[in-house]
Length: 367
Image (cartoon, rainbow, N blue to C red; front, side, top):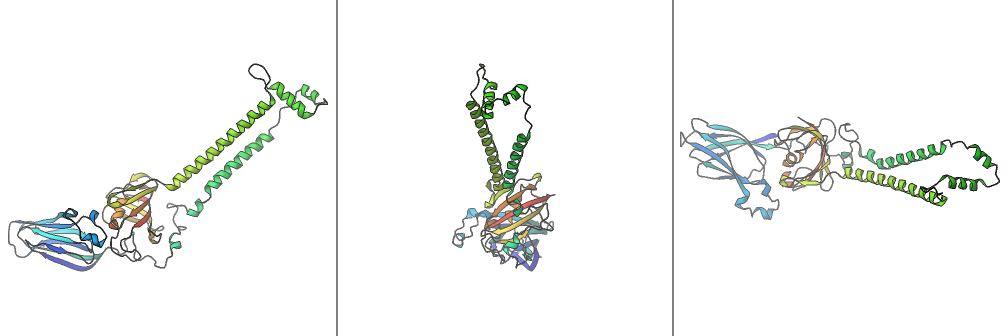
């Protein structure tokens, strides 16, 4: 945040002062005037503004605002001889309407600075290389191992799992085929000398050995049919197992359900982290890629020093303060920021006015 120019205004009792800043404005101090109309009374500075949740970006509807859309707050209260000035830290956004009013008899002076909030402040970085193509912006080859595996390396993993299972089944079949058969009894050796064909002899032996519970022999055809049925069941089990693995992989790739938060911000957890949870006041370190709805990348932090900010402190756009809250270390999330919670009607370099912003973020650290 960089100070651009000095700003000041004189507030007179009984008169409302309405301003529409041409740039972002930071009010830094309020002080009583040199002449006091009431040497012991208190003077309160009130501020009225449009509720951000009610702002409509369509110009034809802005003129139809109602009193219910306005919010009033107290900036400070000054008492002659006790508290004659008060430090402030209030940022008023450009192109929005604000009204000041005094409750009391003394004149109050406000002063501050016009500021540039976009100087080297992610999630929009003015120093970002303008000649970077969209394809290069998505290249995460150089990202450290604590961020993400390259997307290309994930392709074909499901096919590999299935191949390994098929090879494992083939190896089991080969081992069974190589197992030594039990040696024949002397009677069997004697029967081998018989003139009957070996195939007929084998069928007769099977018929003699296989008996039911009542002591009667089970027909060979029934035995073969039972073996075939058992094989089919095993194949069905293997197919079900493979299908479940595919469904699980698809669910993990799809991520959780989308949720809508305050201000119309939407989030979807792609991967749930563990450990400490990000709350207002915490210092969080993030990786991110910022895109427009057409897929164009306008900003990113995928390597080197991660982007760190104080959650809920106004260091970033409102959509980030709302969308990052609740993440855990290692968690990955998609955050969709509507214009009112992003840059609004302002055009920011590669970001058109009234743009919906899409961020893919990962939480690396929470302090």
